[in-house]
Length: 312
Image (tube, rainbow, N blue to C red; front, side, top):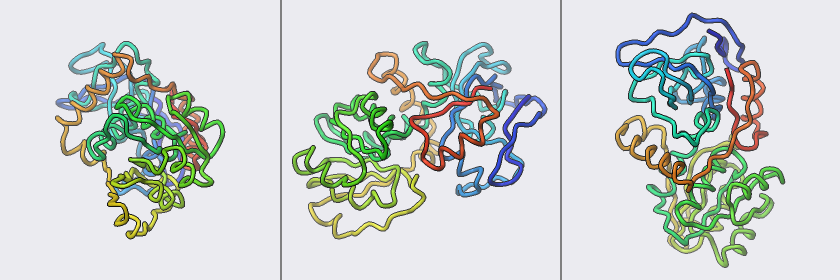
């Protein structure tokens, strides 16, 4: 089978590998699409907290058809941790989740991580209520677009902040009520929300963090998703104390791994929203496996609008 292999940290190449075989309790998925996520780039660069030794096959999220093991012939999506950028991948049978008819393989392969993070963060960690306002930073990326759609499905109003016109257009198309550039987030958010937003969803960090925090109204919640800018910010705690604000950390990945039953319920709820039409995941850009290196570079340099799926 063909697979994208990280033979040394910082680079990848397509290689021929032996076909995978299912171990006890596993299924093998013929991969139709593999989602490309920020975490995949961190793995390849050796910057993630889990550091596999090269050579390894990156790719944490796939969609395709079970070809070996229980449920053969079923279209499924799965989180696999590693190994997804390949024509075949073996996963635990319980990790393979049937795909709703409304989702094609590319959208299914770019769904679980972004949308699960958004729902866990906004509903379960920030307690977002209908009628509240949300400022989504990095709103033109895959995580940001998912947050826009999930916030709208929860009944919130959404201001999308993104660095380029095409990313802001993508956020509006995904359902954001308004969009702003990142030159003066605090002023834009306070003006739009008439005093301050209830929740800030921040997957970017860096220089956007402090103005994002300052854009909150009384009892507002600043939700820390990640640091796509590459810089972990130091927040002024007096701005947390003032107006009784809260800073809320979100580590969906660790939570999902340690609470598989709760994660499956969360994912089933999300897929139900897709089936009902309450969520309409944005179609990703698609590329062949041979483009994996370029796609990862673009993703890590924040050049990607929305998400990208590799098609083996």
